Amino acid sequence: MPPGKRQSSRILAFEHLLNDTIQGRIAAFDYAAAQHAAELEAAAQKSGRPRDPRDTLIAGIVLASRATLATRNTKHFEDIAKSLVNPWKT
Image (cartoon, rainbow, N blue to C red; front, side, top):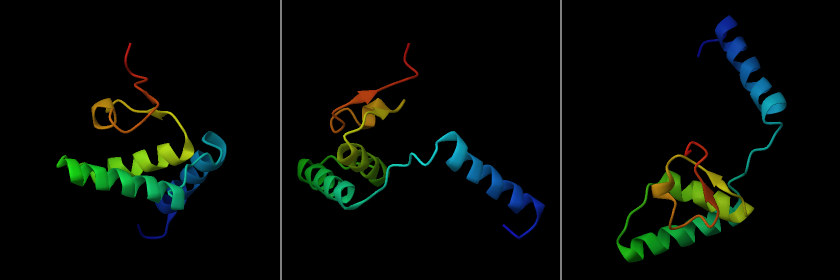
């Protein structure tokens, strides 16, 4: 995006999101997450059930963080996330 008002506005909105809305609560894809993701990918290949790489990375982060995964797409994670919730399900 070329420099200008639109770019500045987007940068400010994103900074507001990071600093004020989610207050820096971003789970990192660190070494532990990478280890979990690698184990998940190896198991998927071994079982012959390929998985979307993005789902594998997300699951690795969740497992490394010992977090609960909130997603509408529970089908893609039900066999890998130990703590899974669909907040849209009533």
